Image 1 (cartoon, rainbow, N blue to C red):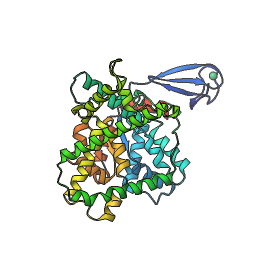
Image 2 (spheres, protein in one colour):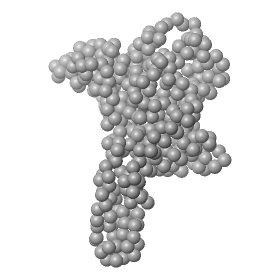
Image 3 (cartoon, rainbow, N blue to C red):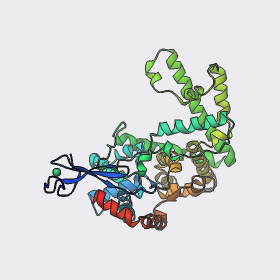
Image 4 (cartoon, protein in one colour):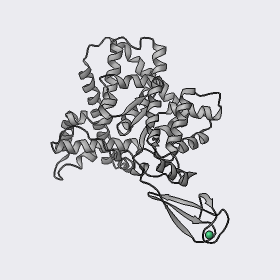
Length: 393
Ligand SMILES: [Zn+2]
C-alpha cells in the first residue's frame, strides 16, 4: 500500500517505519504497510460542521506576497491568514475557492506558486461554479413561484458546496483549475469597469429616483439580459448554429419547467411575469447585486465619492468583489472582504449579515474577525485534537 504518512513499524511483518496512514475516509483512517498486505482502521470522531469562510482575493494576495517576500504583505492580514490556515488544517474551518480566485491569481507574479498556495489554504475545496449557482437559484425560485409558495428563498448550503467539505480532509487535494482570460486582460477589464462606473456618478447626482425604484430598475435590467440571451440563442439555433446549443440560456431551463403543451409565446409571457414577481426579487444573487447597485447610487446621490481619483481606487474591484459576495456570501458563516465593500454590505438597504446570517469582516474589523476565530478555536475538543494528531501528525 502507498503510505501517505508513516506512523511506525508494521505490527504484522515487523518492517521498520513502513506502516502508516494510507487514506482518510469519512469516519476512519485506513492504515497499511508499505511492504506487506497488513491493514487496520483507526476510527475518527464525527466532526462538527465546519465553519465556512469566504476570503476574497485581497487576503490571499497579501498573504502570498508575504510568503514570497516576508517584508511585504499587510501584517494584520498575515496574522489572520496564519490562524485561518491553522483552523482549516484543524478541520474546524473551511475556506473554499471559487473560479474568481483562479482568474484573480492570474494578475499575480509567480502564478504557478500562487495557485499551489491557494490549493494548500483551501485544501482543495471549491464552491460551485457561478453560472451553475445562478441557474440553481433562479430555477428553484421559479418553481416556488409557479407553485404559489412563499417568496422567501431558503438557502441550502448544498447548492454551493459539497457536503464533503464537512468531513475529514484527505491527503490529496484536488487540483485547482487554471483557465481562460490572461491576468493583464483581467486587470484592464477591472480598471475600465471602474472608470465606466465612476463616469455615471455625475448623472446620478442629478437624479431624484427612490431607492426602491432603482432597485426595481436593476432587477428589470437583469430580466432584460435573460430575455436578450434567450432571443440570441433562439435565433442562432434557428440558423443551425450548433455551437449556440451547447450553452442553454436560463429562460430555456425555465420553459422546461412548464407543462409540455405550453407554446413559446405563452412560455415567455410566464417568464416575464416571474421576472416582475416578489420571488424573483428575492433570488439571493440578484437581490444582493441589485440592492448594492441601488445603494451605491444613493450614496453617490447623497454626496459620497465626490473625488474621482479616490473613487476609482476605492471602487476598482467593485464589480468583481460584488460578484463574489452575491454568489457565495449566503452560503457562508463569514466573509472577509475589503473595507469599502464591507461598508456597503453593512448599509441598511443591503444588510447582508441580517438577511443571510453571514458575518462580514474586513481589516477595519480585524478584532471582531479574531474574536470569531477564537470561538472556533475554543470549540475544538481534546478528542478532536487527538484525532488530528493521528490523521495529520
Ligand atoms: Zn508489513
